[in-house]
Image (cartoon, rainbow, N blue to C red):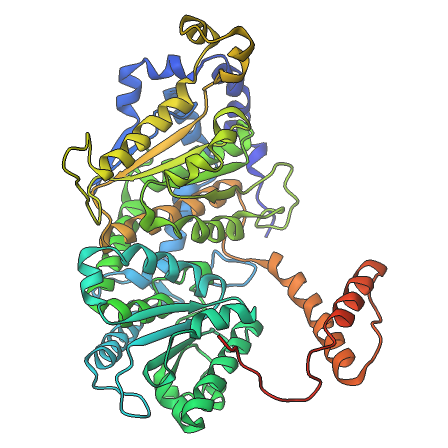
Length: 568
């Protein structure tokens, strides 16, 4: 099959390139004075309000972006994803994370088979298992209830579930169901992470969930063996079957590890790691902590956005609009980064998760057909909850580089605080900043305004804010399990839209492979040097020098083949 044309060769792309000069002539102050324009750039869906009026865009820009979407066959690509076609062409896989939260009676096919019944078979198994653990019907090797859970996994097996867990911790309903329970995530192979995770926990009351599709992920399996040793040392090797379960498709290796294959929870090749939080990867540990009923609400929130994304027209479609505006900012206005700024501490782990969803998906240099891109794709994502970020990196956002911002606000706080005699509540104080910051970025402050305020002349340039800095504001009605699911799906689909328009494969991740393969060579060298005193060979001068220094400075490490666990 002949490779398709690059999107940058189409007329709509060229029209947008030419349109940039028109936009640069108009400051956001002027655009924001057009009430009709602002009103047209507010979209409501299922309790959420998206305001993108502070984008450097006009109705003409939106029409041109719509033309670009048509040239990229965006709607066809979305339909292909929902129809289970193998749009991840480099791995020959469907992309069906939407099936993970589809209603039970839905029909979503992959290779001619409806996968929804398989999804619900696993969900029902998770519901039954989590209820047995939570009720005390399933007990540990010494007869005690398992009230602590350590989920062992890395990347998509960790970042998504951690984001949802952190967001639910302070939700009133979820926290009530979580009383007396702990959920921890062990991801980094650094032994410090092991120490932090097992500190204060009793193996007798701890259940471990090992998350690895193939059960071969190097970091995860070393951590799993470490935790297995921690349990075995305290309770004996036979306790492993009572205290460890798996999320994996490799039942042979699960059983070989010492876990009963009946206690393995499946997921499928059409689930990418960074899109797997709605599979057993996230649903199992979250159900153990909060109960399946709470997690099911999270799935329903995501499903609501899935249906909206699939059916809503471009001009009313939240993920599509956000994705197209990101393409506009990155590829045309030349803003490669994006700040994710949730004005709620409960979303402190949201930006780290979206970093992976976005940057692992769209950090590509070739088209889906393998043609080198003559333009840069992907966004550099980072973020921090407000108002903490204001005291960290907002200086750069206001007066340094132009970085488009996503402001995420919540109408009702999870944990409202009111103090008698205060001008506003704590949440109102927080939200005052949520409403003020986008305007500060858009309008800025001119030298003329400063002079009218009698600012000394030598400070005028220092206190001038250029403004004209784009942002979007997303206002959620609350932050419960349902809303968290909505937010996740909006960003997942937004990333897909960007990739569909750029013409790249957002669902593979070959860029993570090279470093891992080189680490294998280093691992062999460390073993040979430690155990057989062999010199460092086969590396460049720099790496040889660093490795030699590392080995010489850590000679206190025991050469005996014995087990040492953290002492915290």
